[in-house]
Image (tube, rainbow, N blue to C red):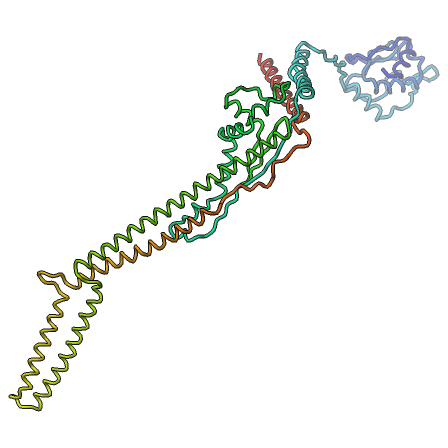
Length: 479
């Protein structure tokens, strides 16, 4: 209630009361009993208080609120006083003030809202938050800062390097790829080997991992709490050894309760990985040597068979080189043909110059006949007869055997070169483990990361509590 309302109430002779919404009352036809004693100033103050406080209850001596839709204008008797003559009006009312008064009278006044009260479910949610989030976080903080033992980290990084050189072995089907294989494949094998049970057993045999990871008896969470089973040691290995593999490079982080133990574990992993790469390298080189050796043995056997076939052919036909014999036979036939041509020329000259009874003509004819018979005999050697093979067939068989022998000799030469190249490649190491980060020795404990663990635990429990609360309210609303 404003100060103007209290002033008006005191002038009217009644105590000021809180404004209550009421229905508009009809305006009286004339001034009230006590309204005649109030001046125009009080009437203006009442109008301003009505615009500020809204519709109020009718007080004695005052007209009630005007009904909605009534015409604007001064109320009867509002501007009359004891010193005013009849028919004289009071001071004019501002139209803007009159509009504000009407708007205030038309706006309903709502009762004040009652304050919210806490119910049983609110207390239950608070208790559940304390039990699910606050209490576990406090217990985790007490454990991490009082009982959790410090752990030291040792880091190591390495990759597999491969030397691939072009060798004569590549001529026999790419044997060089067997000698110098891709380093990416070797890195994949090494990545799986680090996570294998075989490596855990090898490192445990060298360093006794159970003793190393059990040096914090007061820390049951981060300390090794398994038995003699290898499977439990492998589980602890997965907790303490973190591996990161990216583009052919492997990074390791090993945790232990002593910095020297952590460094010894990383050094053992590096050495065992190098031995694995050497074994893979030896296997690849042995495969290459075995393959080239097998090729050399087959080439030798093929060359031996080809030479044996040529020897048997020579023994059967009594010919060292049938091609040379053919050349000789061709030379004999050529020579006989030249002699025959000369004798035919001589016979023509004799018949032209000598008498028909000349004995030289008979001798020349006899010589020509003998030469022709000799040419026919020589030519028959190239053909086939009932008891002997044709010289052309003999030469064809010899040429086949000669080609086989030449191919066997060429294959043997290439196989021998590939074997020598593979043997020379096996002498040097083509793949090796190249560490770009040597095993480090920690100067201070980095783990456990207590602040980070606290944030993770608090965030997880908060999300869990929020989800549970949402589920609870959704089930409650469905009832």
